[in-house]
Each structure stands twice: as structure tokens, then as C-alpha cells.
Image (tube, rainbow, N blue to C red; front, top):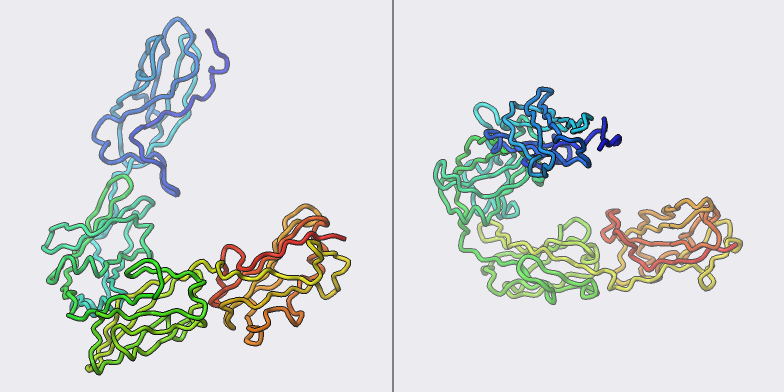
Length: 480
């Protein structure tokens, strides 16, 4: 049987089952170094028709050179299309292709495919590079240092040659030289901050005090690896007998350092309790720190009653952290002037929609319709009633979205970043007619179609906007 569609048509490319999945930005069909010492398995996709009185003949080429030539039986199956080839697997990209001569004499080439061989490990230099630690830990990684730096130690990973997608770093914190006690592993591209290793205080303390030997290994996607130099660090991280547990938010869900309050629970303010087993000694000065004092929503409140004290954080401060996470901690200063900090509570104040923000209003909307002819030249006035947890540092954005008269999309801000004024806290926004949709914008919208007036709040006044509208949207139909 002769198949004209098969003759001279490109067949599907050969497959290399051992090849790794291609990473974004990386080379294709990378071979793991573990398979380079053995014959490489190549699989040919079965073509639709064989035809002829004899079986097909398969020729496989590697970088243009014939490496396999085989006559198959007429009744061959897919297992007969799996070949173990002894190839010249030198470093770099290679081209694998093949052709099939059918029993009827027609020849069809297979689409060429690139196979990448990587035999070169990452270049860490000579002598190999070492992690770069802050100079202040050269004399010792202490509990005081860790507490002052978020209970963690960071180190900079030096740049290295051959960095590529798929590189992994494995780092070690050894109690004796060359012990290779692994502490963690991660994609180099996923390090946050970039090219920075973070050693948690818990992990450091778990390995105890004394001389510690810190090093890392970079392994590329193919499996080539290189070992760094070793940094010796003196460690004295065992905490002093000072217990300052994480503060607790009254009524919150969760426990330990991660707790959550619903926004509706924060109306009027919240309460933070200092644990009863906190060690705050007589004569010491202690304070609760909510957020970052000096920044919006940050406050420092004196702890007068000592351990077990419950302190009030006002609604004005809490409102800045709606739908966000705020660090809460406390500290005590001893008689020598040394400051001891507590563990940090990461308090999430979520579900702001539970505050039932008002709907955007427009006095010109009659029922569900806005008549363009009734809109004055100054535009359609909008209003927002006062809302719960309203502050004078919040900022407002109002957007109009809809369809224009050419059936194109419209999405424009009519207000963006407008600061809420103290005088508006009781009356709401737009009462003096300063919040409008320009008539020119309305005139571009398609008649007899709904459009959306959406209002958003930047709770902390930073200009970071939520993904969905804060207020209930106004959705009128625009009519003539």
C-alpha cells in the first residue's frame, strides 16, 4: 500500500525518555548526568502506515552522523521502536533526527530535536566562594543578635559562573568539619531576598552552641554540582533565661505567632494581652509595640501592669491594617539598659467586607437608570455615606467600567488617591459635590447598557488598592 500523505512528510520528532522537562528560559531536553555513562534510550513515534512487502528501515542520526540503521519486521510494534544508542555525549546541544524508508520505497524524515548535554558544574571560583555573613556575627552568633534581627541570620550567596534555571542550593550547618549536616535546600531562583540564605534562630539553636561550619553546594539542573568553601562561626545562641512569649490578641483565632481577627471584631479597637508568664522584672520599662511606631497604624503603648496586662489598641491604628498583617510585639528594658524583645505576633485583620461598607450613591439615578440628559455639565455627583473604621489617612479610588459606543471596554478612574478629610468622618464623602463622574466619560458609554461605579479604599493610605471593590458598587443603566 502506498500512502502519498506519508511520503516526504515530516514525522513526529524522536523522544528521549530520560530527558528532563524543559524549564522556562532553560535549554531543551537536558540529560541528567546520571544517564551519560550508559547508552541513551531513544524512542521513535509510530507512523501511521507501513505498507509494502517488507518491513520499514529506520536510520537514526546524531549531529548529522548515522548512528543506527535497522530493518524492522513488517509486523513490528512500538517496543521495536525503542533503541539503546551508544552516542558521543559531549557537553553542549546535539541534534537527533531520523528517517524511515517504508517497504514501498518512500522515505519520510522525522522532525529534528535538540538534546542538551551539560557536563560543566557551576563555577564557584578558586578557591571556592564562601557565604558572606554580616560582620557583626564574626565574634559570635548570639541570642541577642538573633532577637534583634527577627530571630534569623542572613547570609549573601556570592554570584557564580554558569547560573541557570533549575540550579538548586543545599546548605549545611555542621557541628564538626565536613560533617555535611544539611539544613535546607531550595531553587536558587526562589531565594527571597534574592541570593540570600536565611538561617532561622530555631534551626541554629537546634544545632547547639560552639564552633559551627557553614557551607553550601550548588547543583545544576542536569545534576552537576560544586561545593563552596566553609565559614567557621562561633555560636552562642542559647537564650538567656528570659521568657517573653508572643502576645495574644483577645478574641482572635489561631495561636502562637499567627492569629486572626475579623474586621468586625476590631470596630472600636482591639485588646492585646501580655502573657502571664512573661518575665518583666520590677523596675524595668516595658511597652507594647503595634505595627511600626512613626508609621501609619503604628503605636507604642506603655505596659503598666506588667505580665498579664491587657492593653487597648484604638480603632484608628487598627484600621490601617485591614485585610493585612500587622506585627505585634513587646519589649522590656532592664536596669542595665539592655532591651529584651518578645516573639512577634503576626496578627491578621481580615474580612473587611464584614464591615458592610455602603453602596456608591448618585442622586441622579432613578430606580436603576441614569439619564444622560439629566447630567449637568459638571458631571454626575457621587456620594459615599460614612463607614465603620473610617479614618483621615485612608485614600479613595473610584473607577467607572463598562462598554463604550463602539462596543469597546471602558475602565477609567474618576478619582484616584483622594485623601479622606477629617471633616468627612461624620458626613461621608461627596456631600459637597466634589466627587463626580465627568459627563464626557458618561457620553462615551453605550446607551441602554449597565455600567459599574466601583469604589476602593487604601486602608493605610499607601495607594495599595484591593483586588475587589471595597464598597458596594453602583450599577445603573445609562439611558438617553
